[in-house]
Length: 357
Image 1 (cartoon, helix red, strand yellow):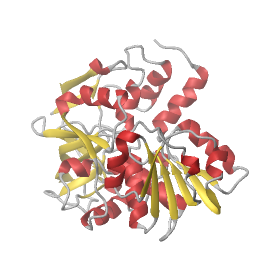
Image 2 (cartoon, one colour; image 1 turned 90 degrees about the horizontal axis):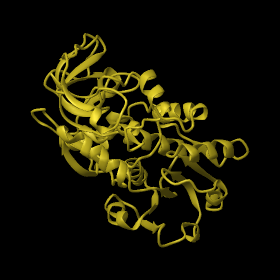
Image 3 (cartoon, one colour; image 1 turned 45 degrees about the horizontal axis):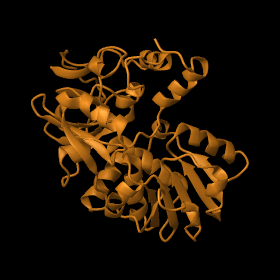
Image 4 (cartoon, helix red, strand yellow; image 1 turned 180 degrees about the vertical axis):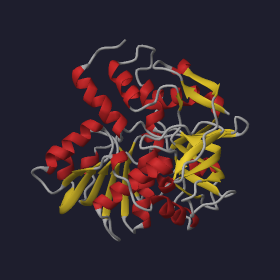
């Protein structure tokens, strides 16, 4: 079968369409004919140097996580073609969505891909394959943040970074729970934030978000890295700030949580949310969850899609259409750093902060 393979550490020219063996599902796995896939941070973070001078930290991380000489792609949607003996919730012929197999998902940008039992679910009937492929990782992260904030009906909620992949799902989840949502984003993203449900919007390029004139029961920081004391001034006495995105912001929130119950941090990939795919399907079919796809690319144009994400602030996600015969949608997401890949890089950068080879 054909696959978009990350052949070795380097820049975008190391991505090659190669012929590789078709995988066989194990007892707790599903084999899917991929119809669409979405770009996630594990796909594009390794190219963030924007050159072939790859940081040593990236090389170490890629080797440890088994990314070299394997297809990229963590989020997909497609049709089940084979199931392991322990699979009962989906069957051959079902349209499904979710994450690819492994603790560090990969292998999705191929004609066929494996999905683990707890990472695959029937696709929402009202969504396209492209839309469904754009749900899994960002939605799970957003759901973790909303659950951690314990958002309730009638609460005032601020979402700082409300127009990226995680941010837009956080907005929709908070609205589904009955919250009043104030989104903070840049001028170019205001219409998208409105479309996804924000009740009020602050353009941080034109306004001081700290002068909004109200207190919040919860603030979810998806992007940005403002001082924690700035957020605390905007919280009610029992309000909570949940840091979701930038690693630097996360460490600030973690340190603040040592002395204040008003702060906490969510590690995206480590915050596995029970039943998140079933919940996403339920919300989508009720019209309360709509993936926002910024652009759609052919899978053959994956390097162009990654280049776009790394050099622009994406709205929602980028999706790639599959079918080396039909794959075509890439889902675009903000470059939020919410997973273990980035933590690994941060760790190794402590020892090799400036070295490239």
